[in-house]
Length: 364
Image 1 (tube, rainbow, N blue to C red):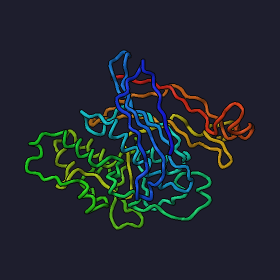
Image 2: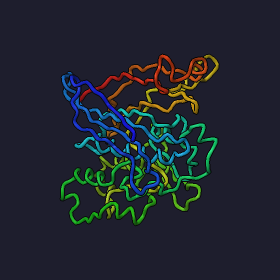
Image 3: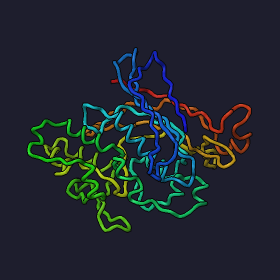
Image 4: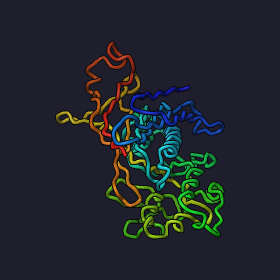
């Protein structure tokens, strides 16, 4: 069994909630490993500007370079728990307290798993499983198996939006009075999803000026592809923003059988607007060097990260960023490692180096 720890100063913070997350799910092949995460909700104390909350997570994903499917499934569970804990309870459920997400993700920066965290969406159907982590061993060796639509079993109750479906139901229903839904029969959302696991056509849910419909290769249905100059959002978040002030929120967000969420649609999303503290690549003269967080006999690369919620957009499209990166520890490059003693050595007792960052936190 893995172990994670998060430490905080009692003079600065009060612990509101602590969630130890075990990724192991009996009988689920993609979640049959003993990896864990730890998620805490902290509240500022003794600071000017009143009390504010900060969500911090720490995790260790599976090492196996060829099992990107397992790592993606573990990550979806982690994001769902962060979504549950960090969401603002009295606001539209697309708004969150600031989030800092740390850990050994056992994935390289250009792999599909890390791209998903940075971009907020990932078309996953048909991805080569052994290459998803971006690690050299997985890219070069292993069986050619491809990710299927239902790689994460719907019975787990986690949506393609990386949210607990029951949590989505509770939040949306809490935004309205009973009169908003008079005469409407909302069945359990999991029943709806079991009847139709693929994303239904959503042409009428998006603004035509912001939408481009394109058929995914190998499918017989149209999937909405949104074009943005800013970081992309998932269809659910876009729908809420487009309809919040239009007077059609309840009607457009709800279908007859429940809130509009999807499972096994071929694309996954999250709404945390995450950015990495590190660039992962540095320019040294004419050479582009890789930053290195681990060095051992099988690899010298980046697998450890600190992510933070760099942008928060409310239902009116206003930017309410709460965390600003001020500084970070410098990481060694692959050239530094090649010219040194490697890891561990007489000065560094681990095969991983320390990552550290300093933020400006705007308190509410």
